[in-house]
Amino acid sequence: MTSPSWTAGYVSELDYTHGYYREMSPLNLELAMLSRMQAHSVGRPLRYLELGFGQGLSLNIHAAANEGEFWGTDFNPTQAANARELAQASGANLRALDQSFEELRGRDDLPEFDVIVLHGIWSWISDENRRVIADIARNRLAVGGILYVSYNTTPGWSPAIPLRHLMSLHLNLATGEANGLGSRIDAAVDFAEKVIDSNALYFRANPAVAERLKAIKNHNRNYLAHEFFNADWHPMPFSEAAAYLEQAKLSFAASSNLVSHIDALHLTGPQQQLLASIAHPMLRESVRDYCENQQFRRDIFVKGPRTMTQPQQIEMLQSWRFMLTSQERDVQYKIAGPVGEAQLQGDVYRPIVAALAEGRHAPKSFAELAAHPTLRTVTAAQMAQALFVLTGLGHVSAVHDEQKIAAARPRTRALNKALIERAVFSGDVGYIASPVTGAGVSVGRIQQLFLRSIARGRSAPQEWAVDIWPWMEQQGQRLMRDGKPIPTATENISELAAMGQDFAEKRLVLLEAMGVVDHARDDASVSPGLSIAAA
Image 1 (cartoon, rainbow, N blue to C red):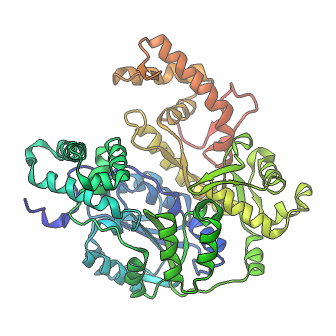
Image 2: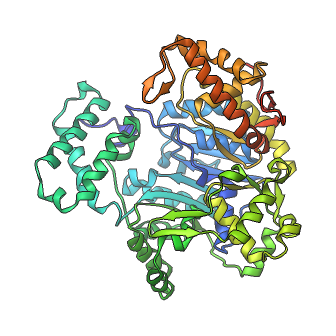
Image 3: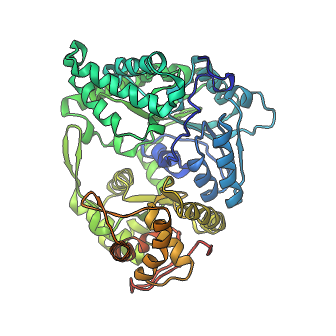
């Protein structure tokens, strides 16, 4: 059956998931550039565009938590309506459109953007749409601006491409539309499993593909619909993506994934030597993908590449502020990667983490850390590398200055209230906004309900549990223990109270530091105030 013209073969029957992608947060993008000693001209207030924003969660969090002018488009009107509803709740300066990339390109009211981002979309659209995106970047990305693009890539995806083709064939040829897309996806996955079980030689020769199918079976069907079953599905090598964007005068600058910058985790010694011997950046990145068997890239391109020296990097870092977003005791100093383990240098990392934990995780500038009495033996270069690594591992985040935090706080407060109210009926959104980091914070449904109860005046974990349980019971929901539903109301309330106590002891101080909670108390049994309004 021919797809409706407005979808251009893109899945629209099942909604996309409410994903949040920290890699697209403005401070993370700028820090990734700085970590690779790449200059940019991203200004403030920010002008930011997201292409193909899905449900709009990332776009709304970034618009609420950062100063600037935010735009986004997603041609699915249901998703655009959801994004607009969140924008209205926060009051952010955000225009969420339901236009195609071609329609967006034709607008005459677009500003010059400092940042353009798109997550995953590049792999799921036609060549023509990729050319349109390049044209938008050519004409609407400011000189010195940056573009973030993530996409499925080869060689990591190469063995599984025939698996996707097989499932897509079955979906389109062997099942009827009346069954619904979700059921057809299940049937296609089951069919692929039967082909594998038939001892087909392709899967015998590529056993990792059969393992991938097992992982696919456990994915959310809405995710699978968009990830695997669009009419256009094109994993591509880095060099091909770079060639498209070269037409927009864009040059590769860095990966937005700071963990990928830790070579010891991803490359053997000989591989590092090999890459160091390759002068051309496109060839070097391509060889790196072969060394890592890369499946998914998170690339930052810049319009007008300029490198800086390490002294310049250190000088720029002086005013940057950072905060510890994990409990000090939870930071691991032995980290595992594809080629083995790496041990973080304890006499450098431990005192940095301890200093960042001081003052209830209060943000501290690079200059303040450098002047800390316990860090006098740590060089500026060691400090910089440690902060980049800890940020990549999710233990540290760059943060705004106090003026920007104060400006963002009313918007994030309003957005978080709207998101937390959704948690009463749905667990589809697992993030709320931090005005401090300018990014999202992972907070699961039950923890969001604890925050809602606190905002409603409940002062202790037992009261939170009693407040939450009627909503869960009304919806026929139970907590799980040992893989089985907890049967009685009393037991569910007791389990909720225990979860609430753990939340009070381990998470509230972090949420306070990230600006989600206004102020916390040392007594974990007493609730803090929240930067969200009561329902």
